[in-house]
Length: 231
Length: 231
DNA sequence: ATAATTGCTTGACATTTATCAAGCGTGATA
DNA sequence: TATCACGCTTGATAAATGTCAAGCAATTAT
Image (cartoon, rainbow over all chains, first blue to last red; front, side):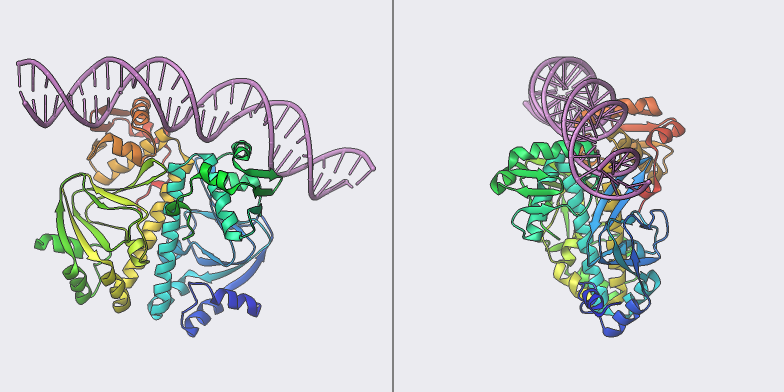
């Protein structure tokens, strides 16, 4: 592991204030692996044996049922996934696959659960991280139940633009079909939603999306901090 | 507080193995209050000052945005709500209102956060409870994104019947409009979904619903443990 | 360079869900 | 008992979303 990667992981809220031995034990027991795009890292229904940390790249969380599939989250560096399943030593509710060439640190779940008993500061960080993930998911549920597809798209664009601080210019880091699934619609409907949203201050050319008229998009999307503010 | 109520709370996974002083400090600092039906206990957007424990009755968690409203969960005795917001000392993402005459224990959030540092066993229980709530919400999101309204209804009925062990006979404990909102549809559409589902082994008479043909309902609803199993 | 693959878009249509309006039935109230 | 209020149901219609099919455009492979 490159020192800068170790530093980035150490800087995660989850590890930032953990004792040095805790961090060492967790990362020391972990495997840092590189994966090409499109690799399935974990499958729903299987036991959550490892806590995963996305060090580099991009990972899609998704789930299937009765022949349908949906994307639930995109994990960017440096982010963690299946923490809840690991802590409760339970099966995965989601699958994960790489969207780009990615580097992932896998820490044995057993070690994570051990660390809980040994390091109170780490435990407190786990509580905070879990609570955050919980609240993120509640926001996702509200987003899904209270909005139409086009509105979800509009708010997603506003969030992305705000997160990147790139003055309303967004370059999609993954396929539109993934975005459509994340937003809870079909690829066809994302195309149409993008067409609709062009009338509300957005321009689209391929993977390049730009918010030309911020005010107009705000009026259309009606963002709500209790759904859209980063958790 | 009646001794049997204290015992019921003590028996919550959250408190079961906590140290006696922890439990005493938390419950001692709390207020046990009775409310008639329809009372709003907490409002979204407001700081989460108290951890709430439903000792008796029934509480609906709901949220609004841009003029729309949806129900997110029903909390039964003995259940806890807004744990995540309390732990992160953040605002509520949901509102809560009583559906029946209810008895609610309110524990100051400050005390809960203090107890986190003082009692490792309690902290571990908080981690487990949070992880459980997290996973429950992910299941809710999958339910919403991967199914039609009628399918959600079918699976809700199967869950209820299984939870009560009442041989497929379900008596609704709250209005159908609440159920419709919980299932992510309008009251009108719940009526239609109930009509549809009569063709799949279910009979309805007012608030009395019965699964007459379990096999047929299973075939229609296609329950999935990764969505429907209790967490 | 050409061909083939792939993802995206568009159109036509079906299904699902929401909205608006009217009517029904039960339980509460006078 | 009669009336009223309320929640639920049903019908008609509209909006949102999904499906199927065809075509387009950019990228990849040959």
